[in-house]
Amino acid sequence: MKTRVITAICIIAAVAIPVALGGVWLNLLAVFILVSGLWEWCRNLEGFGTWGKAVLPVLIGLTFLSRWMMPVTGYAWLAICGLILWSVPVFCESFTVQDSWSVISGFLFMTLVWLAISVLAKEPRYLWTLCFATYGSDTGAYFVGSKLGKHKMNPRVSPKKSWEGFFGGILSGIVLSLVLSLFYSHGLNPVLNTLLCVLCPVVAELGDLCFSAFKRVYSVKDFSNLLPGHGGILDRVDSLLYNIILFGILFQLLY
Figure 1 (cartoon, helix red, strand yellow):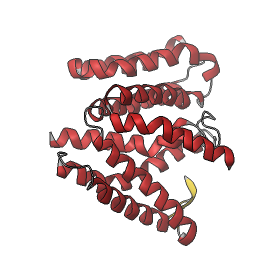
Figure 2 (cartoon, one colour):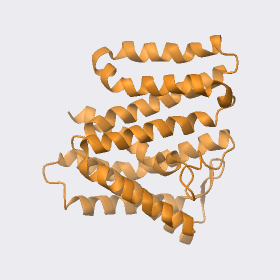
Figure 3 (cartoon, helix red, strand yellow):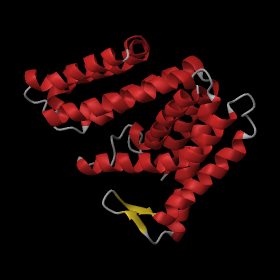
């Protein structure tokens, strides 16, 4: 427990300033999450010890470049990246077709996050809303579920989650983000900010379940041990990454 608390304090200290300031600081934090997240995603795939040193740098490079290439080339860039990653099994026996599809999924997911963060870096207050809604939901779901949880939500994916925790988390996430955003939302798009407050708690629960399903398939408890007592980077930001993509979708539709 002591290790977990110390790690949590260090995480908050390392994340608070970039989230508050945005700009280059948030982009640097995003690069760290991008690199470590793709490594954690791939390290659990079979044969990573054989093909990882060759494929992982390519995957990171393609994802990183997507922020500048996508606005210019769009479909062509995604097609090029997809063909490159899909073709690797032809030239590398240890890199299976299943590995290829998993890596393409990681590329697409992290690219969507990376593109959305380019917008959040210019107006980080939306990220504040994302964080309050996401972690308000996570915290509420934990406490309500541990106290009142009786009806299992999806034991196949996450045995501990209950419907009581699910709805308790959604309520706490909505209330917390709506109330706290009153103090800083002046100048933000009120429709976008309100939609984030209402939808993010729901998507946060979905994101947590989806990443749990990934770990179930590959029989791992945590994505890595980068954060002592907390698992890996993806274990801590799984729901937030889903909500960052949700922000990107809503921003595109509203602007």
